[in-house]
Length: 173
Image 1 (cartoon, rainbow, N blue to C red):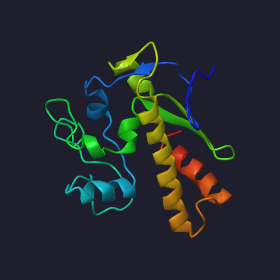
Image 2 (cartoon, one colour):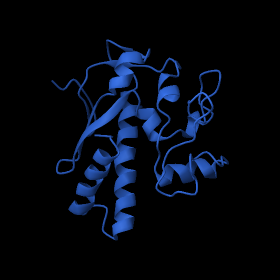
Image 3 (tube, rainbow, N blue to C red):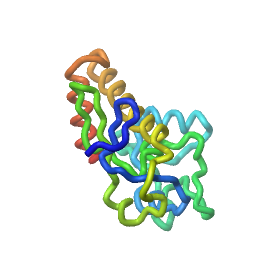
Image 4 (tube, one colour):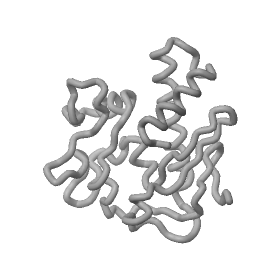
């Protein structure tokens, strides 16, 4: 039963979410990011935050000694909160499907977050627009990157199909 929707983003799980800065997602799952987000963070002045900056295929942000995200502070905050990656904004949700024929993005709770996140509650999701926009940004960025690499239009059906495949390969769906 679909209970929440933001434009073309459909939330399959009717839960509320408000970040409580518990740090579970930042400690347990430092994000992998796309090239556009990496460039945006670098433009803001941050350097050497990728796990292996010599490997263009490695998209993981470095971890601190305790295993947490490089940008996670001891105060349970994010050093780059105002420019943090869309995948971080999306938490505790994940993209479970992208129907490129209808341009629908389906979100559900990340199984790890469902167990550990202190910000999940019964009720209306107050962050629905922010999370919905993050999901849209992830799909849009991936589509643009694929279009650029293939030389096809971002509206080409092959780009949409490859976007869905990339989301699946990256375990986003």
